[in-house]
Image (cartoon, rainbow, N blue to C red; front, side):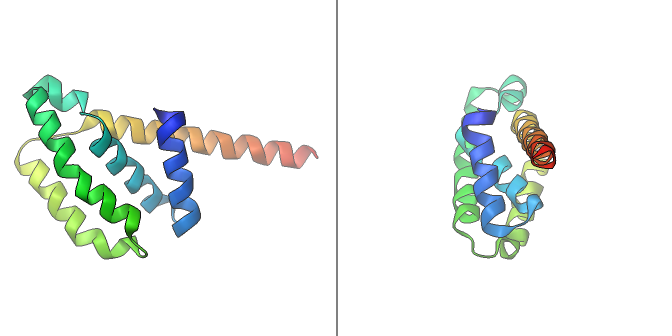
Length: 118
């Protein structure tokens, strides 16, 4: 999931916006909208995880289509506040996002070292 989905999504967003924070946001929303978050499923059941996945999909699409993702800040913060009020903590999606960013950083570091050797 990290290499086949997260990393390409991160790279596309980073290339498009030149902003690692927004690239991370799109990766997080992609995982949240693509997979049922297993942390939510363990705490609240599969139905709640599926509902969350469906609810996240419009936010993922809005981010993917945004020319200026910062314009979505208020909308995303409202969604985050909703999740907090409901006690939902999509930890698996967050973990996959962080792992994706870690792999991207390692990959870039390795590329820089190889370039330095040439």
